[in-house]
Image (cartoon, rainbow, N blue to C red; front, side, top):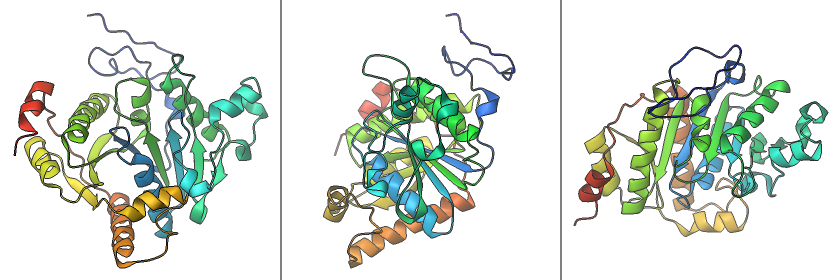
Length: 301
C-alpha cells in the first residue's frame, strides 16, 4: 500500500501518521505548548462527558485554569458546566461565512461552573466533512485569540470509539490519552481499539497513554484483568451511582449536588485523579490484543 502524506509549507518532516494512514500531518503552528493536554476517549455512552466535566471542575478546585473542548456534533459535552447547549465553533464560523477574524472570544468560549472555560467544537453535518478539520479550526481560533496562553489544563472530550482518523486528531495535541470504560465486554473491547489508535498516534506525536478510568461499574475485575494482560493501569474508579445519573438531569456537575457520604467519596476520587494527572502519570506502552484474541479473552466466567 502506498502511504500518503499531505505536506504543507512549514510542516515538520515526519513519517506518515500511523501505519497505512492517509491523514494530514499536524500543522506545527497549531501545537498547544503552554498547557497540559488530556484527550478522553471511550465507548459511546460510557460517560466521557460526565467524567470530563467533573474532572475539569476537580482541576479547577485545585487551582488550575481549565479549558474543556467538546468534540461531538451533539455539542453536549459542557452543558452541566454552562447549563446550556452552547453553539459550536462550526456554527459561529458559518455565521460569519468562515471569516474567523470577525469573531470574538465570547462568541465561542463560555464560562462554566467554578470558572471552567468551555468550547464546543461540534462536528460536520451528518455524512459530510471531517472531524479532524473541526478540531483543527477550534485550536486555530483559540490560538488566534491567545486563549491558550492563560490555560493550565486542556481536556478534549471526544465522541465514541475511534473509527475515524479525524476524531483521533485531538491525540495530535494531547500529552496523555485517557480511556473511560466500564467492567463489561463491549466497553473493554472498544477500549482495546482505542489503545491501538493511541499507540498509532504515539509513533509521530508526543501523546502517550495515561491510563484507564473505570466508570459506571460496581467492580473492576475484568478491567484489571485486561490491564494486567496488556500493560495498562487504572487511575480512578467511579461506581454506578444514581446521583451521577441525576446530576445530568439537573444539568449540574457532581460538585454542585446535595452532599451525601457517597457523593463526597466520588468528589474526593475526582480530586485525587486531577492531582495525579497534574503531577504526572507514567506514560504507558501497552500491547493491545487482536480482535479475535480479546474476544476469546473476555466474556467467560
